[in-house]
Image 1 (cartoon, rainbow, N blue to C red):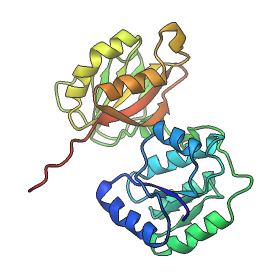
Image 2: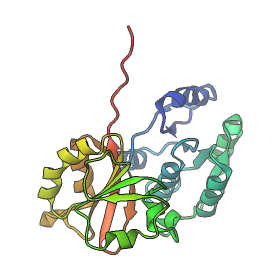
Image 3: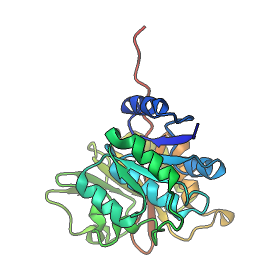
Amino acid sequence: MPRMALRHWDPEPAKPRSSMLRWLGYAGISRVPTPPALLRELSASPPAAVVIDMARAPSQGRDLGILLRRRNGTRFIPLVFVGGEPEKVARLRALLPDATYTGWKRIGPALHGAIAHPATRPVVPDSAFAAYTGQPLAKRLGIKPRMRVALVGAPAGLPKTLSPLPNRVQLSAELDLPPDLVLWFVRQPADLQRGLPRISRGIREAHVWIAWPKGGSTARGELTQQVVRLQGLAAGLVDHKICSIDATWSALLSRRRSRPKPTCT
């Protein structure tokens, strides 16, 4: 039976989706891990197709599709996007026109067609940030009206860089009040390691962008995306999105690892 990889951002709805795919005759269904482990896994053992549910966290599904197309090892794996809001799906079609788009009621025929007729010259977006071209920085960072946004260690002039902001956004330099979003700027590995426990506690249920200077080298002991990711994971923060803030800073969006819900016995 063809092996399949299902990417879903909600464990409960993922279970019946996996059962449906098994019933259709596809083996090896799993809620695959987040990047970069996902990319390594799929490169090492490509499945017949990757199914990405767009009902929840559609921007993450879109970004995952772009990442898969931009890597040589995963570029030719058929992508099947399922569900999602029509407007967001239309924007994704413009970026990945030769992927397959369907609903769960038509997943059987859609998968059969995607596997039988894979793209021989798949469209590769110019950049991992292709979906954000032309969008204001505040929108790319997920800043919404009435949000409390904490700017921790921010460079001078960042509020101006973020403008225009949505209505009634509150910016602060502290974590005193429960924030909706945190932008934390770190310059050295020691600053990252020292500050992670405080940030992890302070964000509560919010998300945090951890920003570091571009052009770093692990060999020189500087901050890089890999260093930020690994240190964050060690502190209980799971990243799921990357953004270029400006010519100087890149950032990973993370949140605290969710705790398993207690079960009754």
